Length: 241
Image 1 (tube, rainbow, N blue to C red):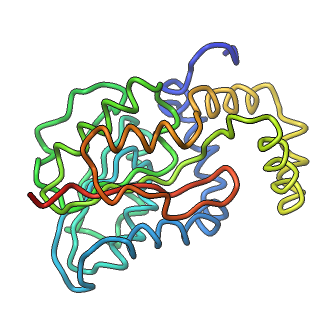
Image 2 (cartoon, helix red, strand yellow; image 1 turned 180 degrees about the vertical axis):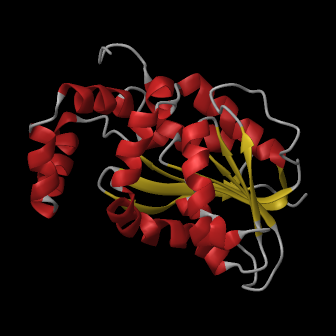
């Protein structure tokens, strides 16, 4: 497998790739849970309110689980294209039986399954939008807008690039000082890890055009609601009128 080829689908639909991800999931979830919780806190729903949320690129469902904990009367649709990831997710989603369902959806296409309704209260994405090219990012945001009910929210937690070499170097310095163990691992990637990294960064872009994509799709209240170096939570809501 070459680092020069987009092998993202192959990685996430392989048993080895998924098991490698799952083996590190607990530490990853502990680190990212505050951002998933923030996405829930930004939603305009009472704690006991009933609504349906969609988690695109849900994987094993960590973002959805966090939101279902915050809103005990909410239900979730988890959309993913990897049978292996959904299989692992079914195990982790067991405590939420009757409050969720998986649907197969490849977000690289515009072919939304009929199982996803058009009047969703919220849509979230986490760590997946950066895997698609710019044109597809913009189209996906428009499709998300169309699947929200008026007043519904879309929020994305994802990495970005700096678009400036000096800023990128500053981010890297800070990241290495904050997590030297991870920095050491990155300096000694195996060939397989290098392929995964190449796929991770292949379509990453700066923040500004993504915010513009949301505005052009029709969202209001568009903002960067959290940022730490190269990671952001941004989003907006569908107007009520």
